Image 1 (cartoon, rainbow, N blue to C red):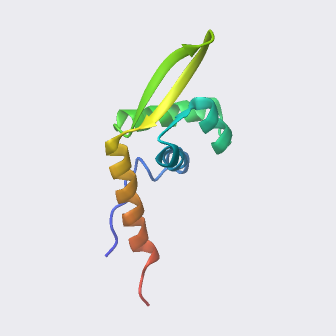
Image 2 (image 1 turned 120 degrees about the horizontal axis):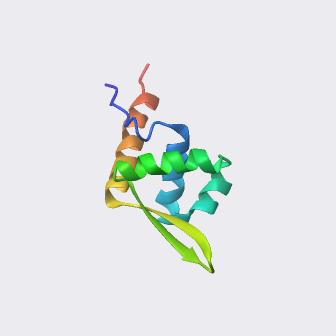
Length: 96
């Protein structure tokens, strides 16, 4: 009846990051920080967990002599997000 929820995506901040990336495909770290209202350190930790799971790619580069971090959702990340949403719906559609 209930489907397992991906523990990587079940964290509120990681789910917020993935929700942003699923709609824009890629985003700068500063955009993610602004939209989630989380600290830079916390976002960095969560981004690394998503990267380690293969759900996002992280590109670090310089733009106008300033460091720039770009996060991009991977096909595996898209699949995991869609599966998470589908499994979450099993919790919301309980028949009484």
